[in-house]
Length: 74
Image 1: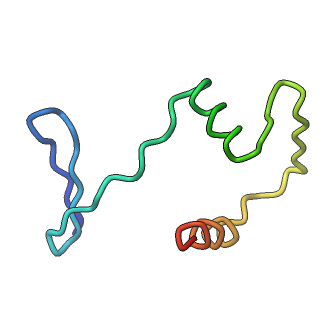
Image 2 (image 1 turned 120 degrees about the vertical axis):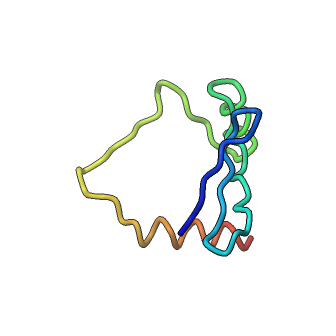
């Protein structure tokens, strides 16, 4: 029931089954410098020495959605 339309500029527009426009998500930062600046503003120092560990667990989508919802309301 959702609709996708291609407009004259080549952009896609998305609509609910009721015909309401679905707004675009926020613009993501451009790679590298802008992302580095955003990380610094958040107090994150991420560089080639940053340690990342992953134990192979699958994504916990419930926890991810909860985190996004909490962020949305702050």
